[in-house]
Length: 197
Ligand code: SAH
Image (cartoon, rainbow, N blue to C red; front, side, top):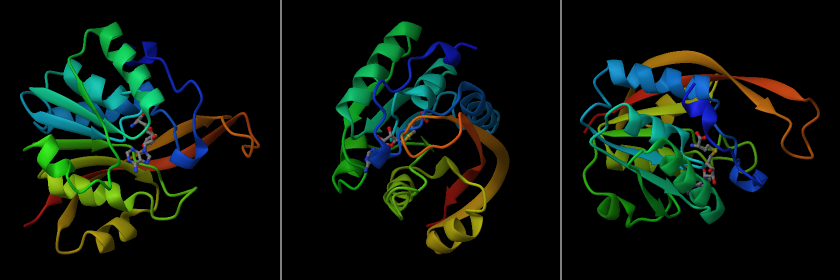
């Protein structure tokens, strides 16, 4: 209910696949991670944080520190307002997840949260997110298109392991001109990825 108060993207950019995670799905991911011991007292980062829902939620659930990383300055401004609205202590970094200096900038982390682009506009747009997540933290919770498990498993082979998957759905409201329905439910899965090296 608290996360439902957050402001969404004002002018979402299709090329960046800017879809805000609905509060209910964000809460599901966050409470799951909390119960696994991956939030409270932990150093958390949200990759492609957009308007900040996952980052802010993690801060409200007692993370020791939270860093939101996002390429789009407009989204970051909304995220900053959202954090202030709920009194959440979140640091934001404007950067492309492909930026190779990020692991050094972000420092040591415990948990990554992310709802990356699914690659609908730009194929493989999710890959640099997975790469950075594995570089930053031993545990990652990511939202992926349903059916992504074989891809994620193959892509992270030798680097990571899918420890768990939780199903969910993501109602996407009509946002872009190419959308044909008022609401489209997208089946998704939240994957808990563990780094193995
Ligand atoms: N995590 C937010 C937003 C999800 S939409 C939420 O859950 O609501 C995906 C986000 O990734 C968008 O905000 C988009 O601007 C950002 N993004 C896309 N490509 C990026 C890149 N290369 N580097 C950093 N952020 C990126």
